[in-house]
Image 1 (tube, rainbow, N blue to C red):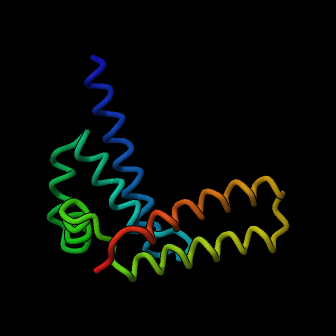
Image 2 (image 1 turned 90 degrees about the vertical axis):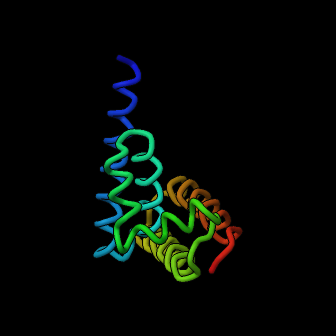
Length: 122
């Protein structure tokens, strides 16, 4: 029973991640590639059929396979993700969001940016 509920949880997380990736296609503040990779990870744990679909998808598949084989992130994806995080944080700043929110979100975004920038590109 516990294994079945774990698979269901991974499946739900995979679908949520791919939904966020789809939203990121049309909403410039939300990066697509990290959510696609996250969806592929969760799908591999909870839904082999969905994982297979993602890997064979003409748009998502190459990025997933590049990540799995070589741990590479396209330079364009890095630039876009870092730019959008900077833009998002700037919007929070200019909207007058509380300092604690700025500190927490800024720290999180800086860590994500450092991770992305230290991965190889192609």
